[in-house]
Amino acid sequence: MTHFVYMWFDKSRKMFCVGMHSGDIDDGYISSSSWLSAEVRYRPHDFKRRIIKTHTTKTEAKLHEGKLLSLIKDHEFGSKYYSNIVTGK
Image: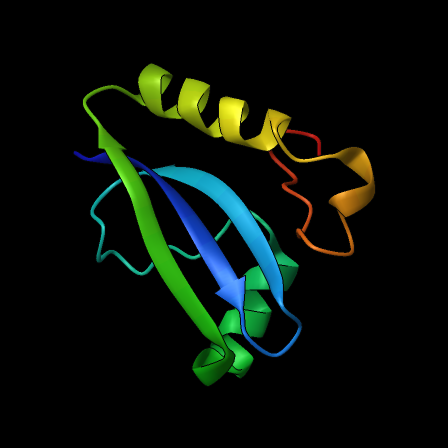
């Protein structure tokens, strides 16, 4: 099993979503946000996913995701970044 941190970019809205996942990189996982997952399925041509880093443990991946999310200013959620439901931001 792979643990990785990813970032989605919505080309249409110029917004990002940072998250982490444990599983295969190509397993079809999109996001913990059902809204974002539906948007990616509805308009896949508008989204691009980048794998930021793979980790050997889920704990390492969660810590890395948390560090990246902590760098985002609160006012940027909703305007530049989609909310990450699992982490509470």
